[in-house]
Amino acid sequence: MKLGIVIFPSKNLQDQANSFRKRYDPNYSLIPPHITLKAGFEATEEQIKQFTDVLNEISSHFEPFQIATRKFSSFKPVNNVIYFKIEESNMLNELQFEINKRIESEGTEYAFVPHITIGQQLSNDEHSDVYGSLRMNQFNYEETIDRFHLLYQLENGSWTVYETFRLGKEK
Image (cartoon, rainbow, N blue to C red; front, side, top):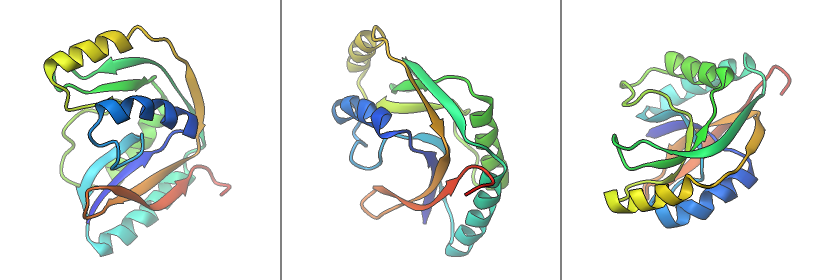
């Protein structure tokens, strides 16, 4: 089974991201806007139980924390992805590091860059046009993150929540 670990932002931020994703992201219908903590990886049914125990333990060691996003950014020239850049957060970085340290899988393809994808698989010209106009926009979203989710992928390629993990000792 293919699993992933993500943070879903607030409905307000998801709605804002989806206003772009429905035009620029072919994965729009497969998964809501999210911050990837651990990219897709394969696991057996037995491993899933172990992973949920580990994720429960990790979640109890982290308190809710703030994230902020204020600008668009891009991964070009590596790939033509446009995203909401999540500002540097020690707590977010530590959570991602701990999850990836404790739940081993094949190596990650990229370094952790916290973001919410709003456009991908764009041609070079389309990327240049869209990113050129979007980066002029100003916005300011700040919110508290109090949970993360273990997802699994369905046969049709969409993702659904397997289990949710609330941050903090008081759950």
